[in-house]
Every structure is written in C-alpha cells, then in structure tokens.
Length: 439
Image (cartoon, rainbow, N blue to C red; front, side, top):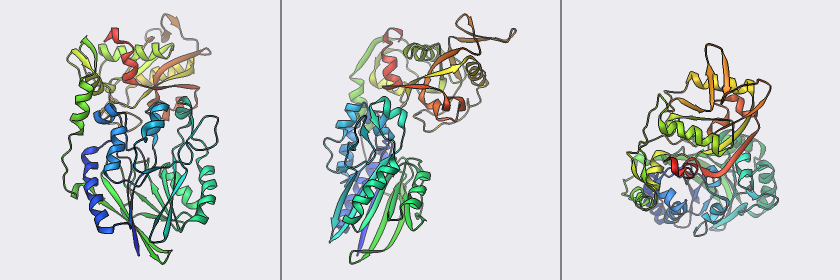
C-alpha cells in the first residue's frame, strides 16, 4: 500500500502560485482518498502581501483550510512578524493541526502548540513532529522562547516512537540543522525541510533518513511516496512538481487586501516620498532620523532601497505606506565603541552593496541602494568623526539605531557580537506611522 505526503514550505504569501496547489491537492484527495496527507512547513505568511497584511495572516490560514491542509507548523514569519497575541490567535479558525515542539512562553516549559500529532490511515499510524528556527533574540523580545529545539525533538521523539509506525519531522530549522537531525535521529523516517529555501528534486538520503524540500514562493509542491507492507515501511521516495506546469487559477487576493488597506487613512495631506537609490532623499534621511529617535540612540543608519515604491503625496493610506515599506523589518539598538562606530560609518560610506539585488533578511525590495546616516559625520580634512557636534571617543560606548536585517552578520560582521536590543513587534512602517507629523 502507498501513502502520499504532499508538502509546501516558505510560500511567503506567493498566492499566485499557491492557489494552483489548492485545486491540485483536491484532485489528489479524490484520487487517493484517505491515503494522503497535505502539510505546510511554515512561512506561509508574509506581510509583504496586502491580503496578509490586511488580515494579519488569518487570510493565509483560510487558504490552508481551503487547500485541505492536515498539519502545519510555523516559520519565523509567523513567529516574529506578528505580536504575541496575534500569533496566539492566528490559528483559531484552522481546520488542521498546528504543531511545534520548541515554541513556548517565557517562563514555561510546555510548548504553546502541540509538539506532535498522530494521523492514521488503513491501520497505519503516522507521527508528525515539528520545530521552528531558533531566532532566540527576536522571540525573547516578544516574550517567547524557542531555544533547545534538538533537546525538545529528542524528548518528544521518545514519546512518539512507541505510538506510531512512521515518524515525519516537519522542520523549519534549515537545511544544515536538518542534516544534523538525520545523523542524530535515524528513527525519523522523513524530514520535510524548509527555511533556507532549498529544494531537493528527488530528495536526499542521509543516514537512511529521506530529506525532502520544496524551495520557496510556491515554485514547487513536494510529493513523497511511502510504501508499506502491512504496517511496515519498506520504501520511500520524493519528487517535486513545478507550479508552472499546473493550471493557472485566478485569484483576486491582492486586490482584496488592497481594498481593505486603502480604506485605512493615515494622513490626508502627506508629503511626497521619492525613491532615490543612489543618494539621500528627504524620506530616506527622515528614516535614518526616525531609527535614531525611536531607539533613543546616538546615531541612525538605514539604506535607500528600503523605499520600495514612491508615493506622489496627498492621502496616505495603509496601502500606500505598505507599498513604500513592505518589509518584515524591525528596529534594533546596538552598542558600539567609538572605534567600532567609526568602522561602521567608514564601511557604510563605501556603499559596497549599492547595486546588489537582496532577497530575504526581512527585506522585500529589490536593489539595496546606498546607506544613509543621521547624527554622525566625518570631516575628511581633519580625519575626525563626530556624533552631533561631539568628537567621537574611540573608547567611549555609543548606540546605533538601525535595522535588524543588518545583524545577521553578512553586511556588518561587527554587529553579530555586539550587545543588541531588538525592539518588537513594530515593523518599520508601524514605526514610521508614529512620526505622522513628519509625513
């Protein structure tokens, strides 16, 4: 007997692709009846889409319901781009099981969602267990804990293993952690892998464990075939199905979200917002000031590519501001020595990333653009750096108000080890609204 497992991950609200999967999965339901399951491995939600923004992710849950999802877990986009209360209630209307072994409220030991669930078909019991990526500082800022994913997985595997015939790990930990999982826990039969946006055309075998992953943005839906003799798993294989070969399905969710957000007026007489990638403009300079002021820091730092679309001025709605700043980005306050502050300012002024097309890190624009600073300057003739009018002291500690996307180590490696305060849950556009008199 065969059991089919269909899986999606990292959809990121690419609903133009995802809607194709709904009819595809429903057709498979008719074909395989009870001998199939459909699961989603997180980051279905992405607030860069107007419908997701307007419904704060609940619209995505309804789409998963329509696709007859059986089990889902959460990724970092569900976990840290919503407030704690919004995440608590995100799945209130879900017709599927939500599982995650390592998400818990600060100060508690039990996971907020069920750590695993068991599904049965024709006498075969299949255990699904899940975990999400340990973005610990971000979760702590929202009063959640996610640390100890491997320890939690080990604990609940011991509970789950005697109860089931097959174990499927739904992992939003990323490809490299999933490889470690396969080596450490050979009792797992299948790891559905996500977060790092990778894909395996025919799966990968590590230590006898099959790893399957379906890329990003709905480029693929994964199909895993589990073959049984009685209740004994005797074979397993994975393939990917490209969304491009599936029938196009009309959807109007972008316009639905747009209509909701356009009815929400922020300011009736807002100034224009220009998009200048290679020089500072009024709004990009304002953003740098806002980051400094909002974080109560000595200086501010942003990049011009944050302005994803211009605004012509006049009535500023939630939709028009969302178009300008669609990013899932938060503010962060970083402590730096005077010497480090000089290094950061010098590095920023090289504009090494100005022509790069950036994907991920919460950024939802295209070209990175140039850096813009506030309240820090350099007098080249004297080779002197200033915070305001004060000469920077290399041994003194200063603070920089900037973006969390810079703290992952790629752009400014110095930030990785600096003391940081992530200011959650407001996204950049939420922060800007607090400075409405400047708009």
